[in-house]
Length: 247
Length: 356
Image (tube, rainbow over all chains, first blue to last red):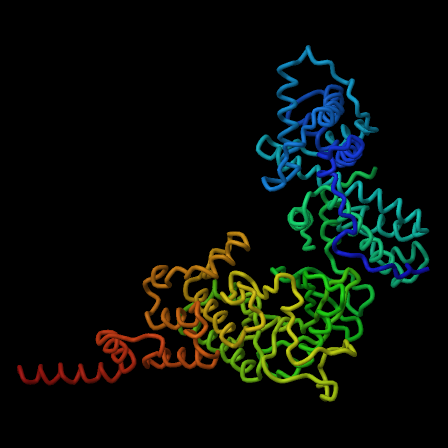
């Protein structure tokens, strides 16, 4: 079986929907949906930031992460963001630091955990990741936030790719992508020939499936990234600086 | 959700940008260069079992127009047979609408790396002279390169110069037609609707700015792609001479693309002799003339520029520099050093004999 020729994937994602603009919408429903989309990518960097930059314990950090997104929706934190003045990601981190500083001052008076936004967040997994990775030094904490954001974006895109492959009957394409691109280090990586033998298909089909999956991954990644940017210019800058892509 | 460690993330980042060549006869081996217009990869041609350099342009080409133009240009450029010219021999389209072209993979030291090891002005000028010769040949054939920069120039072990990346070159004269016999190494990709004689990649690329900001002429920075001519390459050669003499690019490479473009359009680079007083005045003048912001003030072609460099090397007056009597005397002394020394020795000997 070889992947069918799908329509050429475009450099620019079709969607022009932007969660970072939607979160400032006058429509409450649009705002909530947009914040949920943002929280999907940002919750893990936020949680890790609370744990590592602010030194809060796991339970406290879980409450604060939930509370931050709920408060952002309720108090419309992101209305003040001006796309012309910088990246949304930086603005969000500054908002988070402000929120945590205020929270620390008002500790004991503020009732936490009763926010209006409830996200199914896998804090246990995030906690495990913190213990596995080296602790960032104070002067690299900002870069760490950016790196975690990128990791989150890639992880979500892998999930989207898996879902798309399952839905389109291309499980074998995902399987090859997973084996070749996600498992093991460069030295341990299986060769095309090994995968061909394992899956009992010709090498050319291995490379075709892999090329198809990567192409789809790229398109899904750019689509997600586009939703996290306010303008085409910002999208192009982000794609170039974070992913090394010229789009 | 699958946790992606730093190693997997690095790998994914690199493969996300790899061109999808599954429908072609090429396989990517690794990235070998990245510039403002695209990325160059070392690739393997399965059919001919050889390594090639494959450049993927950044600009998407949803209509296929850019590829048709590149095919037409490459077909024409295939006629440029010169040992210093590495022609494009295939052009194709990626599924994500980007265009790629394929060149012979040649070995040599990139001019910027070569400059760091080069010793002596004579050696440097000999290589620059060879570069001018290659570009002058293309000019004589009615072709301009438009992206001359150290990254596109290789120096071989015997000082031979190879100019790469003719993929965005423009032909000023001549026309590739359906009836023209194709040379043996003409591009493998064929299209039915070839563009006319005025085919120009610049019309298809976004912003119509062709080239690399640090090395481009002011008219390129302004996006005047239709009016570019030999003098645009003369500016590029001047910028390269500047780099060879000063050891750095004419405009600070560390600033943003926009800032460099602005500086190219509005400012003169720092005078060479301000950077290094040892640089001879005539050479600094040759460089300044080649890099004049007004096209009319530049050399008309690479051949003219090469001729002035020859004049300097032969100790003759150069057209770019009006010398004073001291400068002229010093040049004559330098040119006829042996004769002058012999006359001086003779005079000293006569004087000593008179005193005895």
